[in-house]
Length: 141
Image 1 (cartoon, one colour):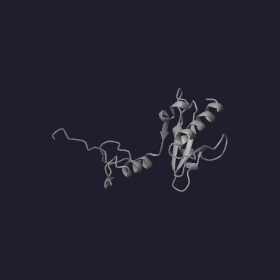
Image 2 (cartoon, rainbow, N blue to C red):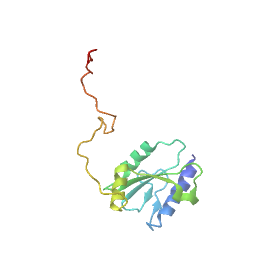
Image 3 (spheres, one colour):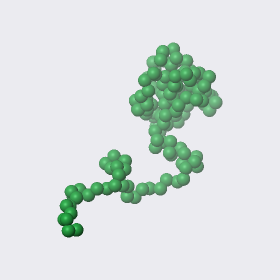
Image 4 (cartoon, rainbow, N blue to C red):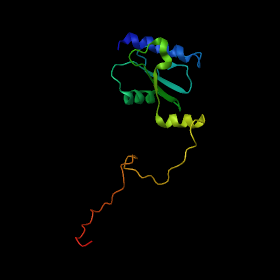
């Protein structure tokens, strides 16, 4: 999208956030760091591009978060404009989201998993299989 749309929507985000942080303001165009200033505890990254690359957006927001701040990407999809800030998409790291949901009482308390049945990356791949090849059955068995 155009640079102008990005600037307009960054200002709209700052305006929307003033409901919670009265001193929230846009950092301006081209400044290195979080896009919204004066929101203690949260590092905001405002995104309006046509190409949706949430991992890159989140990585950028994390790089600007300091001292335990929550990195939040606000993505403005096509056709969502400055009068619809509440309908934009907020992207946060899942671990932090779960922590916030737990603290707010929206999920049961976390229970440690003692013996995960998982693949090398923590994702269950299916039934465990023996490292040994299956033995051949005799016709008499």
